[in-house]
Length: 473
Ligand code: GLN
Image (cartoon, rainbow, N blue to C red; front, side):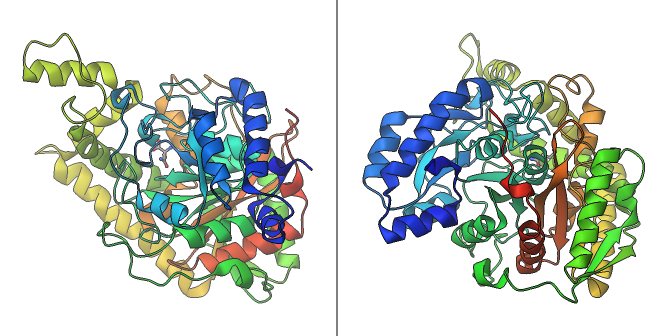
């Protein structure tokens, strides 16, 4: 039996029966990583000896972590040169929770620099490849986490989602990606991109594993002032209930121009299937959808420019060597340490926040954000969930969009609104294009109602075979 190919809930069963031990699972993962990751480049920090040592001392499951989540005394670089060599002096809250449940930390996964991107091409360690087609991107920014799960180099992984960075790579790699409600999972120890949008979530092989992992990482945390004081429900049983009578909205704004025809066909068939399972699917309008990308790139860059101010060569990572005095040192460190996309966002965000432009751009964007959220509030008065495509296109070729930031920004047109509204979303595999590239179905829910979207995702998944398909590597 190739243990690396199993899900966490299957492995948990075998562990509990005493049929296997944690070291057996880790060995099988190590084998897969050593065989495949040279070509795939999904994993950026990895220490074989440490993994073996940890696995011998544990009865838990192995997990990979996106490189923007702090692990004490382990390289945490956001795949940026500016954090080269940085080892945090503390664990993120999610890491503490995993360790408490005996999970084995395997290593860090590749990502776009500071999670800026939709393709994992802006990493200082080079791009991750899509396991379904090595000439294509895996999506981003959590592309390393999605690719290692899809390639069976991992059982599951954590990612982060600011505008789609879990759901979009999950869709493009054919795995399940869950972005919880804003505030459900503590952001303490997640290196901030845009603090009002960032949320840690899961990349898994099936929906049951997403529910299992969500339970472990959720919960109120006094170290994160935006963490919500809500209880942590166990969804793994409830998601198996049927979905008869649930009302599902299909937003018309998500099926227009720019949607790939194969993606559209897969999603429409999936909606039909969900209807056959007993849910009632009806059209709905989310009229402010067209402003989401513009609003997002003002708010996200404004927050990013402020969050990145701390990387100045004094406290973390890289410090330019040839500087004459302190201002010169700041300038040289930031010029050498940040990549092009990070610089672009710092400039854009600083502009949007500068006096004279603040009202016209940042403040206006905040107002439209409220309208986007209101669209969802209105829709959720009538509907229990909203179903859309996750990404307008399947995985594109490496290099295809790197010279064209606007086209790259449009990759997240369907996922961004959920972050602006703070609501939960999950992407589940729903078919393949003619070129055999995976397609994802996005299910959005009411705040803190992960249960309903996971239930719809689970029922759909169990009625189809998509989640069982694996790339031929
Ligand atoms: N692709 C979007 C961006 O570039 C979202 C990234 C994310 O969710 N971290 O900002």
